[in-house]
Length: 144
Image 1 (cartoon, helix red, strand yellow):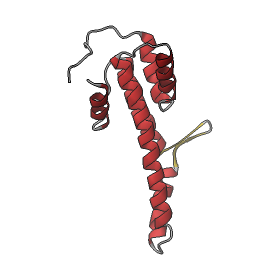
Image 2 (cartoon, rainbow, N blue to C red):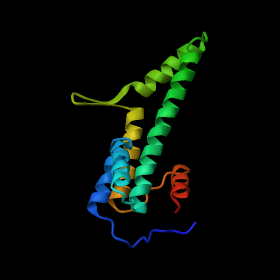
Image 3 (tube, one colour):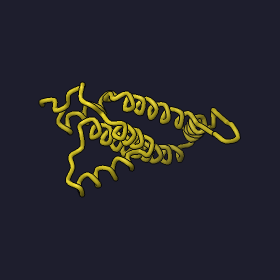
């Protein structure tokens, strides 16, 4: 597919902020921006479209993976012997690593926050943040 986007084209600060907010709200701000763009009959620039769709895709992916893990953990919880091991693993990943009076972060939350900061930093710098497999799917589907 032809690349519709020149790397040297100007990306406004408002586009960068919308892209960043899309990541921090798990795609909600981006989804609203897409709806507003459709109602006003304005096309999104490829930069903004890429980041919005990637944020939405990651949010859905996180939801599906977490629901699948909950389902598997619930089934394994009925198997004697394995339920103790599964309980210990679940406790380990859900125990607060950072435990301040105003902030409690588990390993999973720190991982999600780190990925969100990485993607937001790339958006702020005007770059297409890359996550293997996910970014390739998004680029293919938006025609880049």
